[in-house]
Length: 173
Picture 1 (cartoon, rainbow, N blue to C red):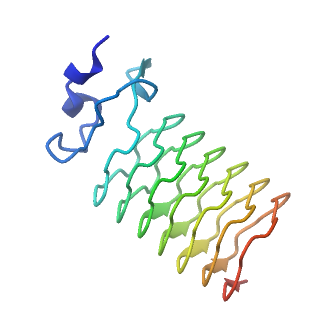
Picture 2: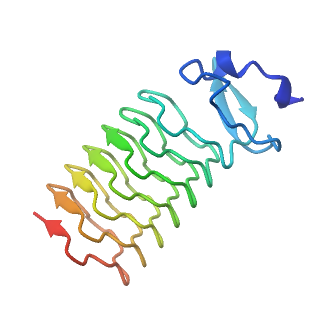
Picture 3: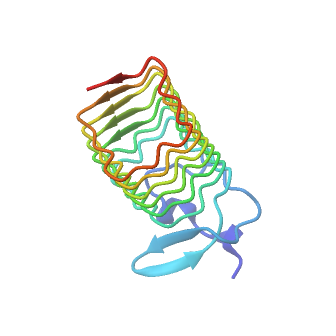
């Protein structure tokens, strides 16, 4: 199946194809298309500045993708691979990131409200100067992560692993 010929406008109608940077090696990425799962890869894709609210990207390989200043509110990113993704200045309100891999992800000034990160992996993630309000990080791995100067309000971390986690100047209530 040659996925380079797919009509990306029909698959991701919220993202104009002329603005979507789809890599050449479409191989492992999973998209939901009317209940059919299609294999392809969007590693390194650039979703910066897009409104992806409500989109289902669960289980997808989004490693190295850019979500700078992207609206991810009410999106489903459960079990997504966001290794080395850039989510700086992203907005995530009521977003599902359960089981997501955020290893070495960059989340500077991200605005996160009432989102779920149960069992998410934040190993070496860089979450600085952002807001994390009313969110669940139960059983999350926060090893070697940086939460420097982050406003963490009413968020829960039951069973989370804090191993060498940097919370310098974080406001935690």
